[in-house]
Length: 293
Image (tube, rainbow, N blue to C red; front, side, top):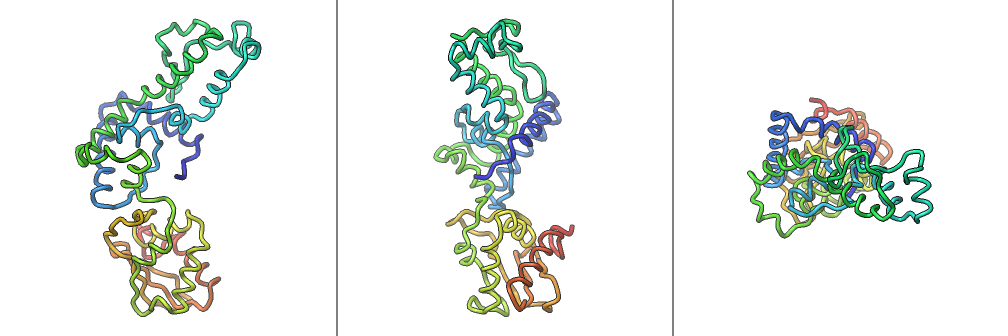
């Protein structure tokens, strides 16, 4: 599954954490959870770009160090270095005589210091204690957002019963809510209807070749332009509205979309280069579609 940049994600979570003490913010997080539940139940496939932290909390799956890596990869890299260091290297880099000795504390997502392992933050971490320290850091960082994540989970389970997710992994829960981030062209074709064209027309064959040549980001932009979302339902999942391509417009015109109907008005462009250029302009800048509202 594609992930948000670790650096961007860190700042998202830093701001996210700073709001946790605010009751109004917790109500907003609960509303986000409800929206996620609605997305699952109605198959809206809304693109919630969230860390595995969130999906595991929703699916009631224990968090691990790899989940921490998804929001703070630099910290996890340092923890691995601490765990794997031999005694001489540890003492030189992290011991009491080091330039910045390692102590029982860690910086949280909001920039504040977190208590680690119930120890005084001025105490030094001895070489023999390094594994205890790294485990305590993961636990501390996993717990700092528990109120906000609990609010999201509470909202989600008000819409979708917990027992319905017990058979799914965190990744599967994300797909159920958001759809798949990649695009199965054959499944897309199976859910496409035509008006003024047939599936064997040269223009339609060109259209699918152009789609196949696009990046996943560009495909997502096209789906958003036509349907108001950036992901498609998973293969085998029911589509609430099939994709519809109709023949309309001159070859000098841009394609137009009707997002309520998942419908694209596609002029009969003479070649792939012209079609690709017109499609990319339309989906990037928005023409009679959701991007233009």
